[in-house]
Structure formats: C-alpha cells, structure tokens
Image (cartoon, rainbow, N blue to C red; front, top):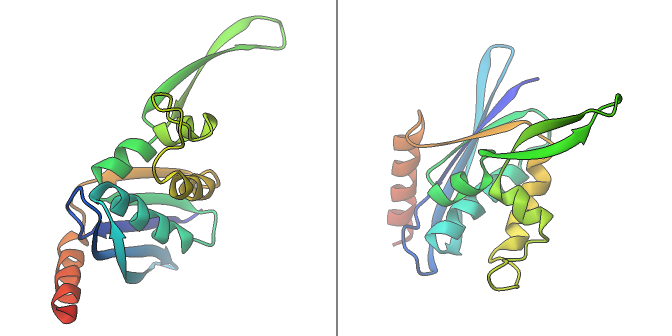
Length: 168
C-alpha cells in the first residue's frame, strides 16, 4: 500500500467569512519516483472553515484506498479530525469474560455518531455537510494528520501570494 501525502494551506486568516485562496498538493511515489499535483482554488470561508474546506477539496481528489498523511496549517481541522481521543468499551469474549477495549477516535467521528447535533444547541453543527464528506472519505483510509511546517510550506505560501497579486 502506498502513502499519499496531502498538503493543505489556506490564505484566509480571519474569523469573519472572507474571500481568499487555498492550495492543496497531493504527493505519492511510484517506482521510486515522486509525483505531485497541486490546485489553487478561490474560496469564501472563515479561518476554521477554510482549513476544513481545503482538506475536503484535497480529499475529493483521492481515488485509491492508500494510506493518507495529511499536513495542514489548520488547528481546527487537525484538532477535530485527528484520532487522538481514547474511548473505552466493554466487550464480552467467546468465553463470556468482559474485556475492556480501547480505541482511538476523533471529535469528527463522535460528532458523526451523534448525527452532527451540537448537544449545547440541539442543532446541526456548522459545516456538518463538509465534515460528513470528509468523514466518508477518511473512513476508507488509514490516515494521520500533522500540523506545522513541512517540505512544501514555503513554496505553497509563495504560490498563494503570487495568486493574490495576479488577481489584484
């Protein structure tokens, strides 16, 4: 099984909905050679929803079941989509003994199990449709998410700046 690296970066850095650009790049190896493809899209989002939307657009491009390594600049996406919550359940084995089973889950998966309902408001979560699309794709892949600087960060930032200057 190959690994597909997904690099996501948004140019929107405000809590108010605004127009900006996002860039995402897919990278994989085939027969020892690196292959990349990138896209730059115009979006109208808040900072948090821009991180989610950038990841969603990148994940839509995946047409294999390979392992995914997602690199993001979004604290919001990383915090809610990463499997970093330990859940415990009680399971009975074949002999009737109760064993405790621990699994890792994400907030996104917990939200999905709750029907995307926010327990505080009783209403659907903001951007639940985008989260559902991301969850559907990720459930078919082993995946990890990392936040921070990566090998394409500076290049992606310069591409976003160039795009903004071109359209100004």
